[in-house]
Length: 400
Ligand code: PMP
Image (cartoon, rainbow, N blue to C red; front, side, top):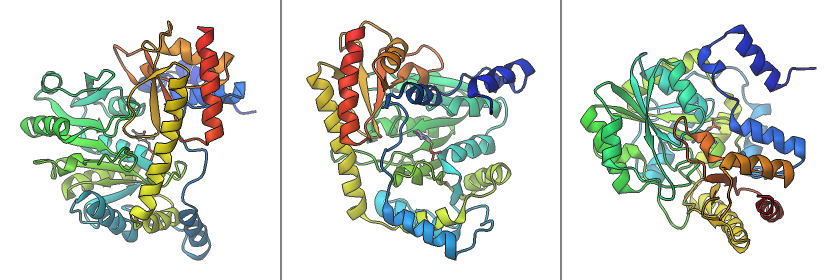
């Protein structure tokens, strides 16, 4: 029998391997999804849709698997995908990218982040990050020898202020790592806040790595604004996207990096020594998908928005207070405002073990000084799952 993840973690600690990783707890998504399986719970924790994405994109991949080459594609990615990514962002976000010199295909956004961090920083460089932060950011920065500097964001608006940026940036800052729309806060930053960040980057001569994997999942008529489009940012932004999110195919792990040629080349070099490339048939299918227009994207967004509204309405009817969800797959439950006298960890543990519903405690997204009054729920699930989740959350509430 294979060791469980826990046994492996203990062994890693005992044998004194990479201290950055041995000090790192297992990811919260793994912890909660394993508990959900163990308890046969409804999983509103980890962010993945319970229905597979675009059937035509999958059919394209299946056909390509049989009729096209399955051998190593170029390390930068297939030209047809790089051109399709550039064309996609031209049509949707008005960006003017050269697909051949400014787009690199990676194994998901996670590898794109790793390649950007390893490709761009020198040990000792400071990296500004916003808390709550996606779980891969901090270990990647530390493994690359970067020194983290945090900007702490708070519910309900998760506002970025000029003062907070001023405090975090220093002459040693090389990079800022920014996620918009923001997971787990479900906030879509508007032009005014992006402008503050862009001004700080220009003033301090800093590169922005902007994780925009949720760019198409924005609701209520909102528009995603890429940080790269702001004045002074075209040459200093590394924009990261993920086909997994765009087509609800999270297991595919096809990501893209878009950046001016010198930055793209540095990221491409790191990518070449990490994974080198990513499956050609999935790249072909994603190229096909990226050519879609709003007749795909508008209903896709509307479907997620409907699920968000169903979960929100059900929770409100049970007396829960929720925070505004402007984008992503997520909705936040405000425990404090709901009158629940428990921190997010206690609530999440008891909810999965005693009421059969998995959630994610938002404090897991903080490296220091955590917010402990909010849990994250994933709404990209079928109606029956959402309804059962609401009922079980109501049950969890009665336990506390
Ligand atoms: N960044 C953020 C903010 C995410 O939410 C996710 C996925 N949940 C990723 C990166 C990872 O994307 P991928 O699966 O393409 O590696």
